[in-house]
Length: 404
Image (cartoon, rainbow, N blue to C red; front, side, top):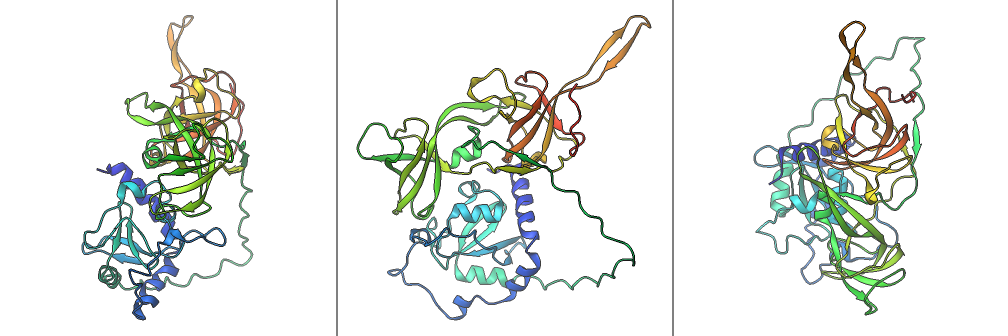
């Protein structure tokens, strides 16, 4: 069962993705589907899975489909599958993460092979549900849409002589180009697949060798890239003991060269260690070379939960794992400060207690954010960091105050 916190997180992601295209898509929602109007329906014999085709160039992200409403009045979007679509890409476009669809995909008993998608299929998408629709269901959901709201009143021009202030330039932080931080969330781990066979028939695989992974043509397409990894240990929340994610050993990455109904052939393009059958794969997402710093919401406070590589000393440009994520307001670019809490001390000459303030010992920047966890890069530090150290939003996001 999906927790209310996770559902809330997906809802926020979906609302943000929808807002920018609302006006354009509201008009599109009223337009009839060209294929449906023409009565075109691919025969079962001629049907070709959307992801089985080899695109001439990398496919763009799927466009957002029109808004519809189910029988309870709940709002969602209806995506029409086109050649090259995958459930991973559709989930990333509509829900801001490719990892959600395995946990919210629902089978429709009226549809044969509901886990396979083909060009022309329609998919109902909400923050808590993804499922294929029959043509009748899709048409009914689109007809349930309320009338478009009246356009807003015309806004008068500004006062003569008043100039629009120029926004300050974005603050960018360069990120070292490592393949990954070696830390993945519970959600990412559960959605991963594995290496199921190797070519040639050798015990261990390395760079330029080929292998089969357990993802079929309805899940990947030729050209997709996957990170190869091996699970190292669980990462636990120091306060609750809950599993936040996993520390993994990154073994390299591979690129899909062929697809079949249940597996795909990949070629290993880079390896940092020997790869075995049973090692896991996940979509490759290299860190961006630069990250724009964004304000951190007030009230964010958490703990450092893990240092990669069993290290005991963390320094400049090292990565750490946090027990807070998107549901707590963190996003890529959130600046944070690590601090040691203040405490009362005795002032013996006046026989009273005085307050020693919090001491900021390091600065960090979020480089990857999941629903309940995040990975941050240390951007400056005045002393060694320890597991369990507290962090909070940077007090002055645009400034770089001296460390105490």
